Amino acid sequence: MKNATKPVFSRWYPKGVLDSLIPPLLKPLLLYAGSMTHHMESICHSVKIDAHIEHHGFACRDERQLLDLPYRQMVWVREITMVCDGEPWLFGRTVIPQKTLVGYWKRLTRLRSIPLGAVLFRDPNIVRGEYEIAQLDKHHFLYNKSRRYLENDKDYLWARRSQFYLDENPLLLSEVFLPAMIKRIMK
Ligand code: PHB
Image 1 (spheres, rainbow, N blue to C red):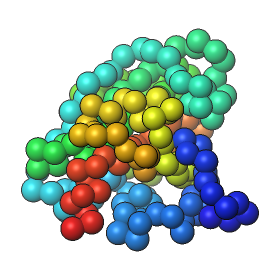
Image 2 (cartoon, rainbow, N blue to C red):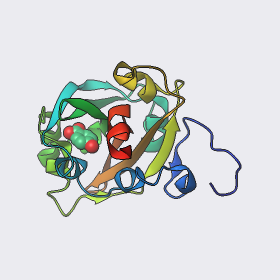
Image 3 (spheres, rainbow, N blue to C red):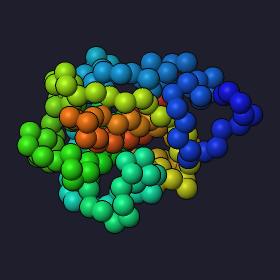
């Protein structure tokens, strides 16, 4: 942690700022730049994407700020759980502004159990922005969305988010690393 004694929970920091706090075994996953689904397939026997939300909805405050969206502008929302060997490992939330959902990209609304990465990492024209990392606590909406996977409350959950640019139009992907994953990789 540079220039501060203690990070603030639920605040997003640029990659690098929380480096000294990330458990060394988690770091390769948290900072993994390629398709997370592919990577998981190298760790788990079976990887399944369970899409529970795919609909028009609203971005939350910190998503709106990052994407520079006006209040109550509708966006496309996709929420999934990545399930590895029957255990929930990762909660993913994608927010896509309307202006991004044109032409080829409309297919992002029809993914269901197809991993988002199957589209994003196939196209060399798609550029990934810098990661931000956070320790989300119970005051953050993504922590609360992940709560159903917690046997008991945690002080915080590790998460990352980054934008992908499709012909310069962004989408925002946030990923929360769930306790079952942490437990397995820490073994
Ligand atoms: C998704 O399919 O929405 C998805 C897949 C893997 C991730 C995040 C999101 O790590």
